[in-house]
Structure formats: C-alpha cells, structure tokens
Image (tube, rainbow, N blue to C red):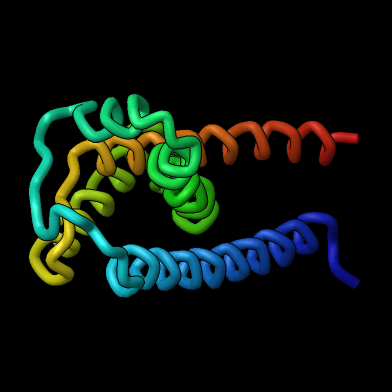
Length: 153
C-alpha cells in the first residue's frame, strides 16, 4: 500500500510524462503548420522589420477573417508552448524564461520560413507568437493556483 507522498510522486511522474508527450506532439504540429503547409503570398519572399506594420495593415483592411487568422491565430499558436514547457521543465517556470523561449522559437521559425519556405519574415509574427507564449504561461500560472486550491480541500 502506497503512502500519500508516494501517490503524489506517482501522479506527478505521470503528469510530467503526459505533458512531455503533449509538448512533442505540439512542437511537431507547430513545425508542420508553420513550415510545410503551403500558403499563397502575393508578395512572395519578403521581410518586414517595421514593428506593428503588418498588424496595422491587417487591422485597416477591415477583414475580420484576416485579423482572426493572423493576429489572434499567431497568439493562439504559441499559447500551448507557454503552458506545456513549465509542466515539463522545472527550470522553465518563470515569465522571463518562457518569454525568451517563445521569442526564440518564433524567430527561428520566421527565419526558416524566409530561407527554406520562401515566405515572409515578419517581426510582427515574432511579437504575436511571443505574446502567445506569455499568455499561455499566464494560463499555466492560473491553472496551477486553481489546482493547489482544489488539492488543499
């Protein structure tokens, strides 16, 4: 018969394994969706290094689909990263570390999109993706707080 401490350790081990599996599945889907799904771009291979330029352009277009797909979509795309990484790695449980991971991975994807997929390198995508990772981290922190409150009862 296991003690309460052993039960918690077993539960934590399975939580970490499940989170690790979810993180690998997410990263595979992220790479596939950002590098291998074909998207037609009328401008072809290009670079935007002016912060908020493409966001402003999309916002002024008045196209709700464009706004949802590009602005909201880029944030949502990286939220799982900010949520799953702290579950898997104890050393990655700070706002700064998650922000750094989010911005770094997003920058790598943007570079690969430009160099290998002949698409657009957009600084606004990096900003929105990094914001998404930070929002995901916020969801992680709130979830952890709720979990601890429920666990105490």
